[in-house]
Structure formats: structure tokens, C-alpha cells
Image (cartoon, rainbow, N blue to C red; front, side, top):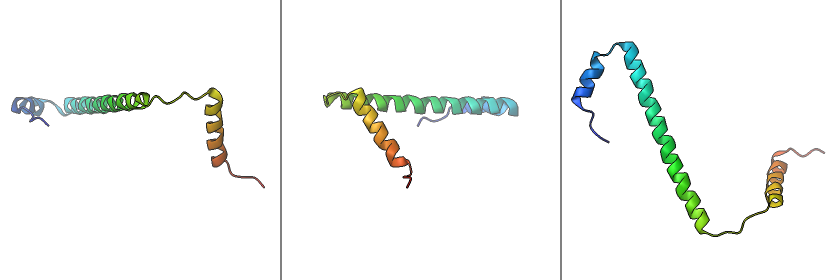
Length: 79
């Protein structure tokens, strides 16, 4: 992590409380955007690894059967 420049801290100290709140909101926005970007990169890497496995595609019917099986597991049995 980089060191915060003393000039930036001096500028922040001169801001009124309302503006500091805006700065804090913006910093939180930037951090969230960075988190999403990192997650996107990891997802892309995972998809590339999955693609490299060259697994056969599954049909719509197989997908539907998997979904139904999961639903059946969650649904309480009626006597």
C-alpha cells in the first residue's frame, strides 16, 4: 500500500466536514469498484481454466434436470 502524500492530508484537513463526508463516500466508491474489478479478473481466470478443460457441453434438458433435482431437495416431502 502506498503512503498518503502529506500534501493530500493537508488539503483534506482544510475541507469542511460536509466535503470530508463526500471524500469518504468517494473513497468507499473507489474501493468497491476495485473489489468488483478484482472479482471480475478472478472470474475471467476461472472461466479460462474451465474452458481449458474442454469438457463436453450439457444440454438444456440436463440443465433442467439438475435444477429440478435441486428444487426437489429443498422442497419438504408431503405425506
